[in-house]
Length: 160
Image (cartoon, rainbow, N blue to C red; front, side):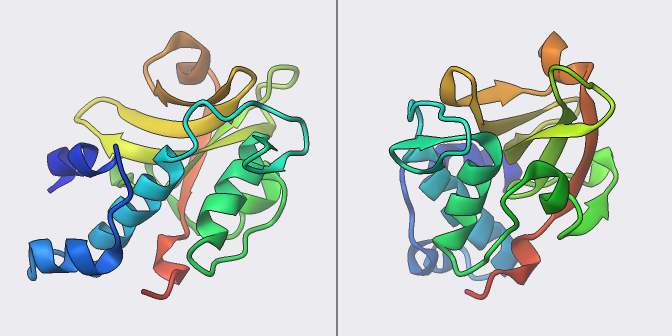
């Protein structure tokens, strides 16, 4: 199912549609596709420091906004969001998980967050609000590869 999630990320798919697609798939997979679909609506939204609305997002504001659309209230900063979910090993990542990176000034302290959209064997893609706006990046890009700190899962807290 992971390879198919990318197909759903181009547009919003509601929970009922995905649940009807395959009755055997776990509900978290359906919810992840729905959350990712919502996040993809904001591709190209401009970056705004402290931004938390579609007028402009910073990284934590973007993740917080997307999850709030599904009733989950996350903290307003990347470091605090990293403490709200279940910590994961990199090999445990799944779509919908949050990934955290060192900042541009201090690469050892959490300064950036993104939402995983796809997971491959040796990499993953994530959507995030970067200084160029909301976009999808890959974990193998040198900037992000060097700054990866941790990941956590919050999607289990979303009520379908």
